[in-house]
Length: 197
Figure 1 (spheres, rainbow, N blue to C red):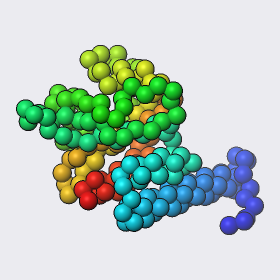
Figure 2 (figure 1 turned 30 degrees about the vertical axis):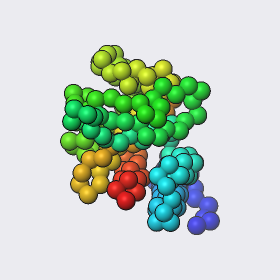
Figure 3 (figure 1 turned 135 degrees about the horizontal axis):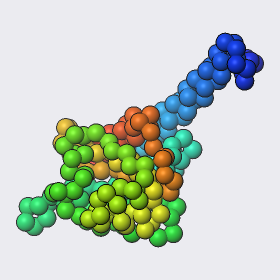
């Protein structure tokens, strides 16, 4: 609505004006997120290939979500029956990519194993501090070498079966909040569907 709201004052009317402006901004952002998610769904329904949809996701959500790198990895079983996670796709603004297509790591004993079990996303807002606490994490070390400082990891689940992960990353510490989790889970859910197809 094009209504001039009184803002900036400390009285109740000014506080209400500030709150209404904040609500309007939050609703606008949510509508933008939903429009971008609808376009992803349209691409999936039109039969686009997974990599094409992932490229679209990277571009479509840039104006409304905080990331400068997205990674997509799928679960596989190696020749000995051991679960491994293999990077399938990644796109970023970074000059050097350390976790590239084909990069793999054993799932057992990793922190990602717990994410799959819980089926809940994980936010790391200071990757350097995380690596200090988990010095054996080779993938965290690679992420830091790429320039990543914050990460939101979403499990990919199709038909209640874990199939992999999506990694949203940022060069800045403190990027992700619980408020981001909902839309990132919706994106991951849509992409789980295309993988299952």
